[in-house]
Amino acid sequence: MEKEPQTTDYLASLLADMEAKKAALDAAMTAIRAAIVAGALGAPGDPQLAPSVLNATGIPAGVADLPRGAFLGKSATDAIKLYLSAVRRKQTNKEIAQALRDGGLESAGDFGNFITSALFRLKKEGALLRFDDGWGLSEWYNEAFRTKLGSTSSKKPSKRGKGKRKKSAKKEATSKAAPQSSTAPEIVTIPRPSIDERIVGFLKQGAATPKEISTAVEALGGVVNFALARLAKKGLVMSQGGDGKYYAVKEVK
Image (cartoon, rainbow, N blue to C red; front, side, top):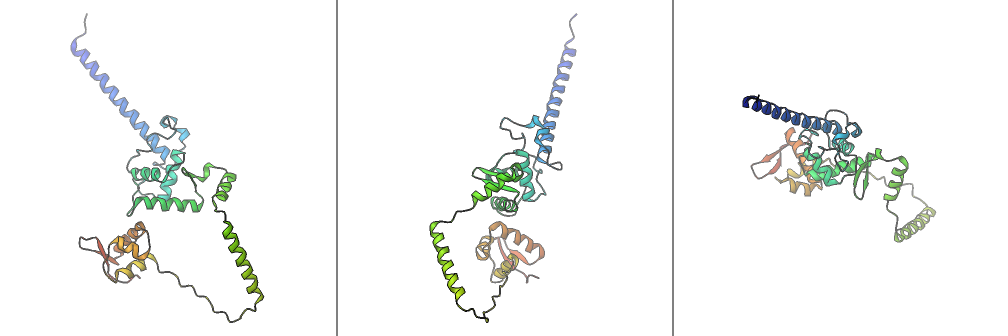
């Protein structure tokens, strides 16, 4: 006895629906594993706990196309450390900046300068190591390697520099032999005004664009944009018309 056509169509439709749901569940599980590895759901996970999300290059699948909010609300330094913990391999400035931008990290100024500044800040703190082919977390390497890398990265003095040092040493010895005056003038160091004070002081002379301000106060464009946003929020500067220029409202307190 042959099956009725309606029964066959129903089973085929049911099978197709089950396959679609299975594909959706697989995609959701992959996304959750990638989020755990990247630390988007809390503390960064260990990629070894989620081997199924590693692609052929050894990079966790989905890291390059994380959800928009994976790094939203995090500082640049925290986002960099989380990202490198996830990929577990050296990354260039461009690769790090692109991944963090895709993950939702935002900057009011030039994004590349924003990330570069954070990278060198982490290097200075000892959290990152800089190589010819990218950046890596210091925790990946033992103390002996970190010490060796730090010593080789320092510049060796040239022969000309050695000659200058000898000349300076000779001059210093001569100055020591001469009697020193007890009435030497006291050197007073005058602190440099803050970025906010420099910007407001410059804008008191007339309206200017962020680029003009950056040149005048000798600061990076990203730093100036952050400062302008902060000063505007405090009511110390305002944007004039639609030409993008700012002008000072009152003194910095």
